Image (cartoon, rainbow, N blue to C red; front, side, top):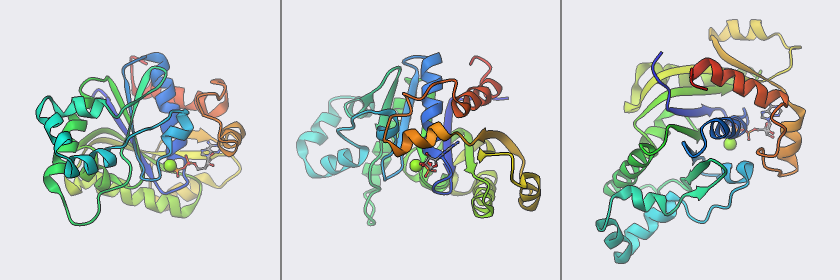
Length: 253
Ligand SMILES: Nc1ncnc2c1ncn2[C@@H]1O[C@H](COP(=O)(O)OP(=O)(O)O)[C@@H](O)[C@H]1O
Ligand SMILES: [Mg+2]
């Protein structure tokens, strides 16, 4: 198995991408403090809430500044793009958070987007692990965030529709469409309660499961109360299952 550094979490809305990204960030930064970069690629911006961090600036804000002000462009000339990226990071306990913000307006400022993506690429070099909470499939990741990903986690719950979406994403990942290079991809079943006809459902879509995460009432309660998932007891069911998954995927974990 190739070494896993970048993990992107995708899947249909509401399947648990943000929850799983947050718990991955937390588990990895407890084990490898200072070595973890989190990227919130969801335009709705969720990781700031689930990690309890305050985000002042997004990549989208930076893009607007670069396009609109000479001063910002001069700053860029003065040093590597990643230094500019560093100025918009939020700092958490053992990890840093980069927030993408809103996608660019149609009508492409290609050079600027290329530059920003290059900045992200070089920023990632400074960390051992990078977790991306991505709102859609790999095609959107490729355009805005990164060109290659070591592990694509495709989330689904027990609904047939989320499994179909997952199957579509896994297909795109396999074919290497849209120029994104996905080294390894797998289905993660979330909110498993054990009373569903799981095998039957899975057989229908013909997918194999990389990991199963249990329904965890505490996760849902913390989310409802807008409490950071960093406050969640680590021996709760979902964080425990996330650590088990990481042990399987990352030998050093
Ligand atoms: N394993 C779980 N147990 C209980 N609730 C969960 C679990 N995973 C996700 N949820 C709940 O499902 C909802 C959607 O999760 P979220 O991570 O925001 O999805 P996404 O980012 O894919 O849209 C949230 O209310 C969250 O608390
Ligand atoms: Mg989300």
